[in-house]
Image (cartoon, rainbow, N blue to C red; front, side):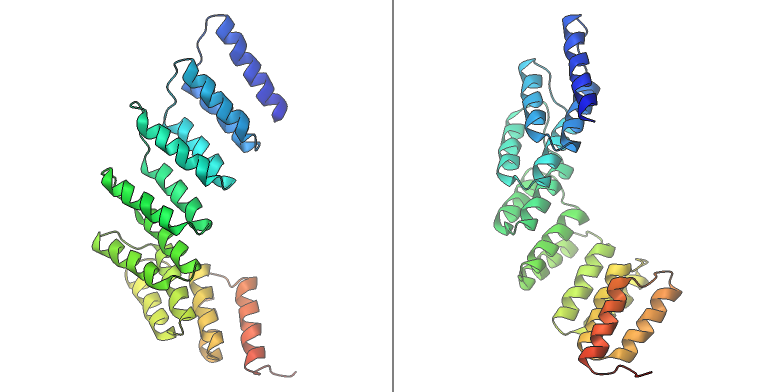
Length: 254
């Protein structure tokens, strides 16, 4: 792949000498190639060359760079590039780019910066979507800030953003970790009534809640429900069951 990139770059240089200007497709292909091969510095250098040649990078070009920066956790560079993008009149950041950076900030527990960017989105007149809210809810929840997570959820509902399977799965897990298994059950029932199909993460979260409380009969019934609904239990499901039996000494000796 690296050889192909070199070949592509040489072809680009040759086309310039022959008087054939490259287009956005050429640049985006080369930049994506660099990023996929973990050659982010080369991708950044190419971006600078594009700008110096008076070509205007499009949203696809910027999106690829942001994705690469966030993948390696270089949040500082991502935020710097975001500032530069704001100052460029031709191409403004879209919600996908904002979501990419917010996700990276949340994964590094930089929650205040994530919330600042969340506020900036709304100031710019961009409506956050379910992905934005899910990212923040998960970020706060994973950092132990459950009240803040609930606050983001409340704002999400007030903004008429419909929860998806990820939202519901986070809620089920949150309730179970808090020991509110009945609330988790009610959440599962609510999502099915709203036509949102639970996935393996939703079921495993509730399964863990049952096992933590020693409700092994309920856990066994849930395994049956999973299978009936076409969601086959996985290794996490069975490990959770084994741990539940061991913890509550309900292992049946053969």
